[in-house]
Length: 495
Ligand SMILES: Nc1ncnc2c1ncn2[C@@H]1O[C@H](COP(=O)(O)OP(=O)(O)O)[C@@H](O)[C@H]1O
Ligand SMILES: [Mg+2]
Figure 1 (tube, rainbow, N blue to C red):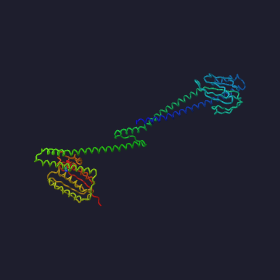
Figure 2 (spheres, rainbow, N blue to C red):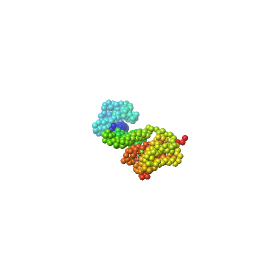
Figure 3 (cartoon, rainbow, N blue to C red):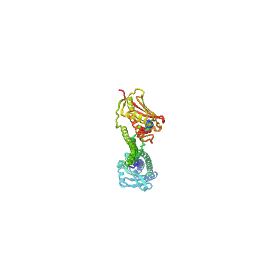
Figure 4 (spheres, helix red, strand yellow):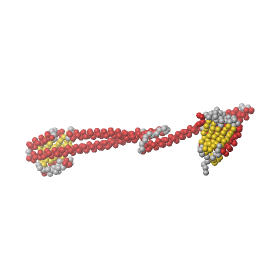
């Protein structure tokens, strides 16, 4: 759909309606004016005719034709009209006035007979170069008064008594002034109509714009949407149906674009994850493959074989751990694995953990200290997961502890739960790295060999487990002064 169409259609409709109404009103107006003026003029002429008839009747009745002739001529010239007098046989006795052709005056025999029968004729005579009003009435015996009937001048019947008729009087007067007035009225009417038309165009244009512009805007927005651009919104605001439509459209765009953004974000994360995983797998697989090829080609001396096999074994163990941790983290994040939470005593849990880790500490020449200050409240934990957290934190601490160092594991109640601390005397973690250690595959020292570090999933798993228990975990570290991981778990609700 072309966006301009609605506007054009609206404007055209407005104009069409305006034109039709204007034309109808003008036509009726001009017609009415016309009728009004001819009514007025007709009445004037009738009155004049009656005044003249009163003067003429006297002379005609007395047969004083000389006097009649003088009178008729005087009246005709002084009034600028044309006069015509017949006797009661219809014979023309007198006619006077200037230029009868200008008036287009012609009297038919049947008209004379009609008037002699006591009727009145009034008509407009128009033709090329002339436009006049014609009135013909009977002349009566002086003193006789026919019934007056102003309304009937158009109908042509005065209803006089034919036996009293002694002749007829025809009078014709040019309609110059009336025609002039009609011209002025018509011009005025046309000017008003023209003004009205301009006004209508102006108002029609504004109204059409007002209705069409939000529709045009929405259509443009829809077009953008179809091109995949979701950063468009409809700006039109109004509390009518169009405004409501605009709001709904914006709402829908928000929803769809939100969903799209989320989807794109998920896709991006998935791609990143796959790339990270491939990256983690590549190095150990490459060394494994290299060593195996060397062995197959007999390039490794018998004496070295043991050492190579050990390295290969470590790589497979690393890969196994990587796969296990990945699956574990994925399950935790998708909440596919539910926690088996049971009430447990924090101190007992810690003691059990450290017992297992003590051996590793001895191996590395690191002392492990457990310190529980107060009686701890019962916790609602998944024991296996709790061990996982402690093993991860203590193994990290062991890895970074210098020989002869101490790892302190501390716990005390607080804030409706238990605070746990794992501190070491290792090199610490630089401030700017601290926010990232929780990310998967993040390792501060990338140069460390696989044998020395894990795959960078440990802390991500730890944090997830603590959060699933409704707790939180933070790290505090000064480079050179060791590292302390602190986590808090809520106490079991009291029964
Ligand atoms: N106690 C610690 N002292 C110093 N750095 C640590 C400590 N614990 C963790 N880190 C740093 O955080 C990184 C992420 O730890 P983690 O997620 O457990 O991965 P991984 O142990 O597999 O390397 C480690 O690689 C290490 O750089
Ligand atoms: Mg670790």
